[in-house]
Image 1 (cartoon, rainbow, N blue to C red):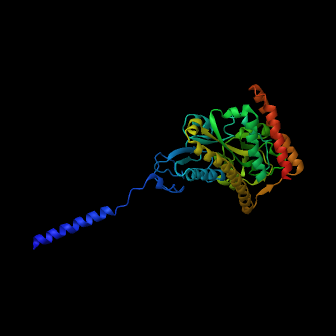
Image 2 (cartoon, helix red, strand yellow):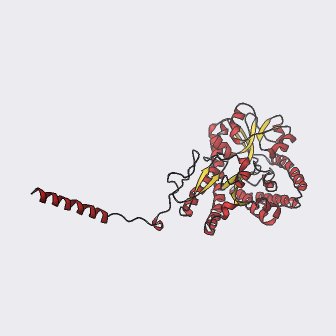
Image 3 (cartoon, rainbow, N blue to C red):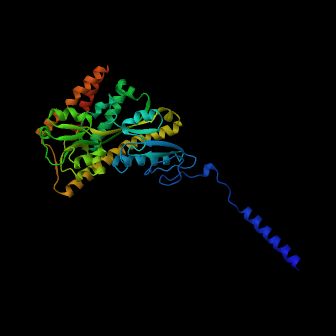
Length: 381
């Protein structure tokens, strides 16, 4: 009886094993795999700094993207959105590892780092890299002050493309790179801690933190320019190293500079510009359909940066007003005329530099910029 019981048990076990094997799920083919969700967290195949949000997926090719802005700011948010869209629109074939806030290399090192292949694509703050783009830096001149409006920022974006198409000397500055996108953010203005400002001479004797392009303006009115990068502005203002800064509302908001600043004059200089450059070898390695997808996405990125910057302008001013005891002043026509006069001072130095470099197109380039800013202000009325 025991023998029959053992034999019956063996038959039942074997039946269960064969049944389980026949019901096993088939292996999915690559064509059945779904595109990765942009926000899905999966193990990365390369080291990423804290705060990098765009995930890498198995089998995807990874693009390294470095930028100098804080990821929480409007431009940084637009850049992070772009990284997510790359994964979505290439159906997971490419994903982006982002390195915000100069975590991969400093902004001033962007061009050399891209040449060396440290990253595939990088933002280049025009203010920090004006030496690498001396002709393009015409759009960094304070007098290139397009209105800080949707139409104004659109005009500041369009002039770049027109200049590149019309003047070979400007397009030649990008011959070693893929010039990917031209991201125009909010314009710069004067912000002070203790003193109100109406006309340029009100800055006399004050120490102002700013980019080098504003040095001649400040010296001409008796102010003391101090070279300082945005992340260092808060402690410099708080400790009295500087009395104020020339910066945009975008940086003010993300760095909380309004906590130590009290007076703002809404005379706007040139906008903040981030040009995105792509390693040429990396770009050439992309399939044509991916290049087309990314070029289309670049146009959307430019519009997203503009929209985000204008939104943060409103949020910044709202936060300043709600804090109380602070003044945001609009210049009178006479004050505007006085600022227009001093804002043109760096123009001569730029033309002299272009002459020494043999850039014969420089006067025409500057004239076109002046024409476009004038038209933008006329349309803004």
